[in-house]
Image (cartoon, rainbow, N blue to C red; front, top):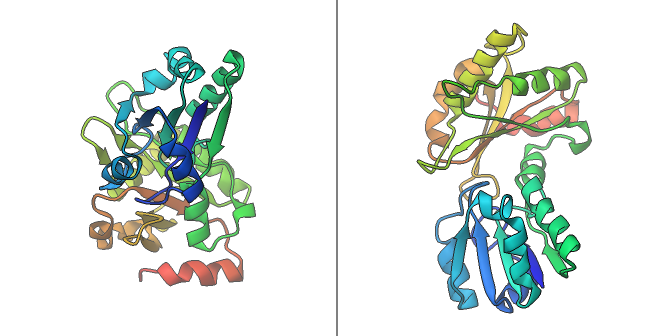
Length: 256
């Protein structure tokens, strides 16, 4: 039996049903490459399950997925995933491999940054276009597709939910200033002229936690709020033309 278990956005977001299932596992694996686990969560899980928890790499769940899944043929294997387990395509690979090997599986869903951020924003979920990620640039890797995705959503009068990259080596999140600069740089590279200094964004940090913070402002003013977001995982929403009800909701976060 294979158990794919979502851990949610904050410590103890694990559902009671999922916790009961986790306690039945013979082997517990956890991936931490899609995001970082909240402080104290790993210790909580170990205490509640009385189990050892092995950290697995991306290669274990992609390149070596056959071997990882095969362990569930004779024992109950639980794979723990921050957020909701079926948002990232990696985890669909796991289920597909389970089907191929004839191994029974169960999925335990949890809170996701996608639903939580949109819900907290007060914007209409049906008006969001495809989400996308701003990746870190390096000397030989400078993708610009994210700003083109922003342009398409703008043209369709759709809100944009933008995820920010993380640095696994330094275990740090992309900052708000870094994200905005990459938007500017990519916009300049593609000559789109959509990332103006008056572009309004809703920045949200630590979504789903008691330390959640949000700021709705023009990007030329982000220096005013950078300290609020220091060290936090951040998402950015670029609203399209908000309806009166949506404008009232996001105005709660307005920074003048």
